[in-house]
Image (cartoon, rainbow, N blue to C red; front, side, top):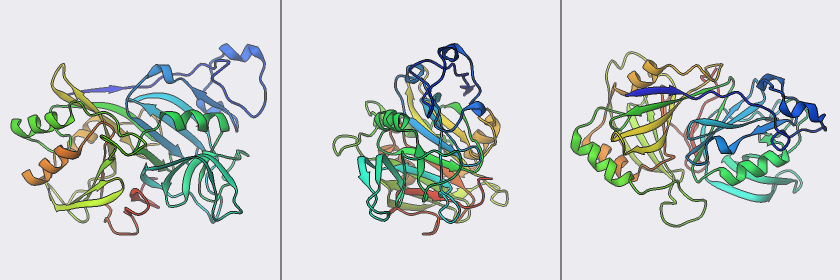
Length: 335
């Protein structure tokens, strides 16, 4: 197994920096730190990773959103999240509903361009960016950035909202990252994954978005297809007296060169993009023991872009909701 961090600096280009105000041409070739972005500014470099699963990470404390494709950061933008009394939900979600021009049913038919809904009426969409939380729970994006993001997300794109910045690293594992497996199980999963692409935004072949939630409190595994609970199985956790913590993984795909699987490991609420602990992310998965039936079910449905989430929280309607397309909602543990 190998571990590789992807962390790139960004350089402002004339076509890549969005802003509420115009900027002098001299700024076009100037390096800028993410922290220096002003309200309405954004950076976008899709050529750095032309294909692969997309992950959106929203940091409420920073009022920033980071976009990764295939483990490489391709964009970052300033945002405006929910104001006091309308807080944006914190947790791990997936995008299963997208509308190019949605109008709010609750707030005077207000336009919500490039809406990508991730929890009830909460969506990523173009909106006002005053430099502080100002929405009714949605995550407002600059107009041009919202349009670009809308074009690259896929059915089941993870949207991870934390109170602190999260890191992303790449892991390579010989089998399903959730557990140690025998050769026959690995071959079965390989046979099901090879040839699959990312789920599409429309119904059709391979359009079903598959996610897995493992709750340490319940000692159970929950499988969700298009945001709906389709299977619930008991699992065993080695050294169960020790917490699992919160961990998210996204499958990049099967690596035919060494017959392994490439994953994104996301350090939830780590406070910094580079803080993804290799040993921590790998060791927690080896504590999980799944039955062959459970493993085979996952192997049948898993695809590039699938999200696996481990948590110590109980999975009950207040945290997990198929109706709202949420893998997990958490108001406290992600810092």
